[in-house]
Image (cartoon, rainbow, N blue to C red):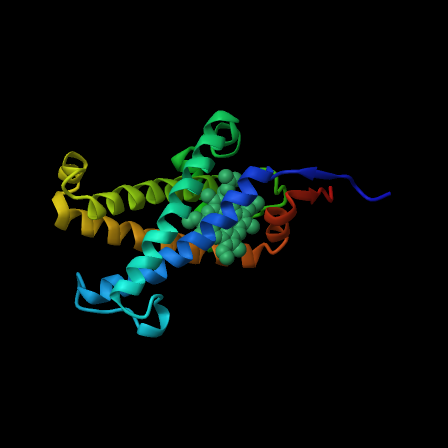
Length: 203
Ligand code: HEM
């Protein structure tokens, strides 16, 4: 008889995970088009990698996807805190263990046999991605309503500072996603678990 499957990713986490991935894709691609209209640094993003066609079109995509990202993010955070999901799956986190697991992952030595438990490098990366997502939304809100959100803006160095915070939190999330997708490619068994929620223990 084959081993029974166990549920490792709750439905709320799976839905919010994929909605988040979709909303972030729209936000990043339209954001790059908005950036190109007034670059902060000495480079622009290739036009083919952007969404919206022109500044006004990109702003419309950005504002539409913003609500999806924001409401979905609130749902994920509320579920994570209230259900105890964050406490169970992302905590406790030891910086020493996170560093050890990250180094093992770089040497392709990190084992991820029990998919029901995140290793310390995963916990650190997921918590960092969540924190960057919050920073991304807060700095975006400051750029959208700089007068109404002056106090929050002052914490980021006002409008200009918020542009840098927004850019670097975007860059951090893009880097996280690149590493995250690479890790999933290295452990492909983990992908179906984020769709069905279930996994079959082999030992
Ligand atoms: C095509 C893109 C993506 C793929 C294929 C993917 C795949 C996965 C998989 C398979 C897991 C479960 C890992 C495991 O069980 O070991 C996971 C978890 C997670 N992913 Fe992604 N992901 C993608 C995009 C994203 C994006 C854009 C973000 C956010 C910036 C993200 C954030 C997370 C987080 C926070 C978790 C942990 C969820 C929890 O348990 O609360 N992912 N992802």
